[in-house]
Length: 134
Image 1: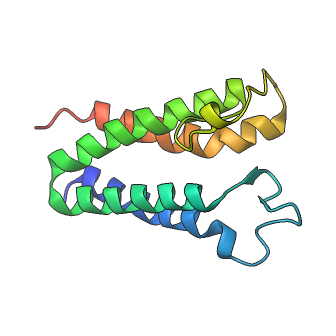
Image 2 (image 1 turned 180 degrees about the horizontal axis):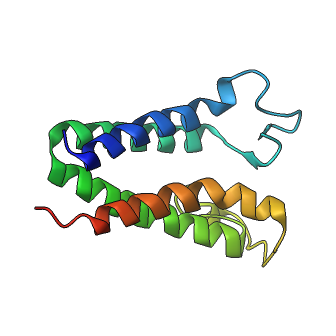
């Protein structure tokens, strides 16, 4: 198993944890915010679960599939985090289409709410593009 396939396995686990956040007692507050920062709904959970299964499939299929996953997933999630930071909503959950733009906000909460997608997407894209093996 290549390094990229192992990274995909890590993404599988991380995305399963993200999908489970709403169902772990004590991680959401009275307003339904995970860690008091961001709200996750059933659509978000399904997106995280589908992404986790994609990561697992890529890890099990081949090095090339893992690289493809990391590049595509990385670009999608990083872009979603950037949109979320600057506009207030991302596109993966159709938030930019269903909500009015929240405008620019340089608050710590806005940054923290988008940090998971910025980090996960950024690292995946970096790892996929950095690898030069066929």
